[in-house]
Length: 433
Image (cartoon, rainbow, N blue to C red; front, side, top):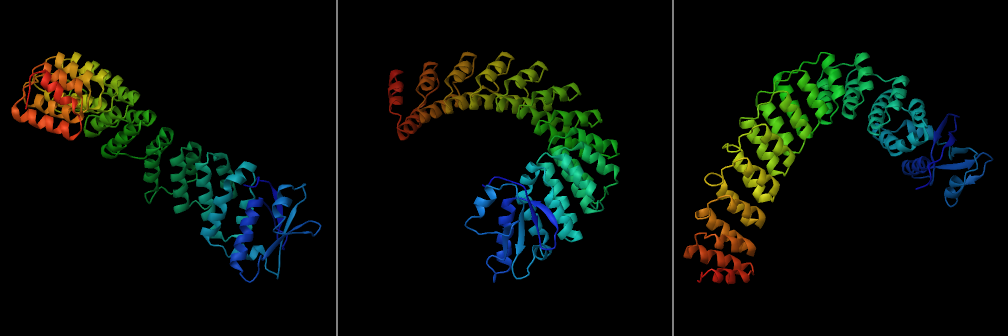
């Protein structure tokens, strides 16, 4: 792309504005499309009147010696007349295409274009779009510049700008808009609230609360759950300090969401603010943390006396850990007394065998899992189907119950998958079909 440079361009009526060489090309193209009888319908001249042809356009622009470039037109068609006919969408496309270049140059020529050539409605809509775009580009100081140029903050303009400032976390802009009396009706305040919540801007949420925004337990609970799910500790803290009730479903959901996504600091914060972990909420959190391999959170919950043998979550925690190969978590659960001999061991054994986790299966066998029942047979069939020879060997070595039907099914699965060595292991233990 042509290097972005600053040029002074004059139309036939003498209005001046700053523009880049890329913008000039864009204007030439649009003019040619608008007035198809002229090709092109605008031309560029140097100050001494030399016409810049298409062939040497790039050369002249890129090797500019500091002389201004004059924009003129043929057949009395002026650039200003073309721009006055632009729709809001054309202005938006033009502005958004070059806004980053203008910002890099600290060049506000496009605002002069808006002020001089656009209608009042287009000016307000484009200023709003531009300010939100600027906030996205992390240039809030320029937003203040535009606000000083004037913008109708009544109705949708003020509300949309508030939502944009909340979305991108500009506390100072939110504060200014609230001070200017932006209309908080019509759902804009709630859109802004949820935008700040979803993107982790606790300071903006605090401003809304200070302004008297009332959030009931349902709204606050759901917002707490969302913030915990996204790992925004600062937002979670704002809601907790505001007194959101954590004793119900939303508090429990917040805990297990944070646990399942590995947000240890959020988990600690929720527990410190009184979420009960010895009941079902703690079991759910243990299951989610174990499923996804967050051993530090599993340890934290176990240290807080989460029931490792609870029906709701502990068995699933062991099963998912075995299935997903989280050996350290399996060890922790076993050390903390999870009942693998009678309660949860069978499904865990099958999961480890199906997925080829020999070390985990060995831990289960060494700690008394029952391999004589149906889960032992299921584990053998799964290991044969996967070609996991070590697992097949250890199961047969520990006398898994192999019925004729089980042996036939296991060897059939092994043969179908091309695991010919499995038959030799069966023969090693005297099992022949």
